[in-house]
Image 1 (spheres, rainbow, N blue to C red):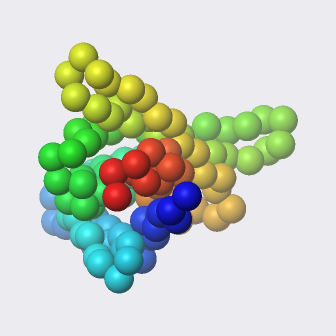
Image 2 (image 1 turned 135 degrees about the vertical axis):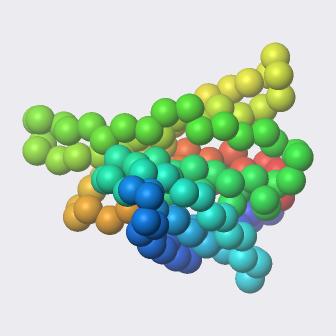
Length: 133
């Protein structure tokens, strides 16, 4: 069985804009190739996390081209009372019309860093993406 390379998060950069939004840049790598995406979102904690998730998905879409349509459906921070920890959840829709499927990804907050949103998206998609290498 062939070993598939996984996308790896290289960098997340967030810069404030003058209009209450921020510019979010995400860079992913696989097999010495870089895929980047840039989005603007609200300059709030939730806005930054959503923007990082969307930019990550956009960078993945650049790698795939038209082979696998992707759509970010949902992002949410969830407090797990039983263990006093927060996770970041993403739901991603993929596939063509009438063949859509859904994937979920999570990442545990160890400290607040927007990179957690990118890691949740990669958690959702890396196994599925290996079919499209």
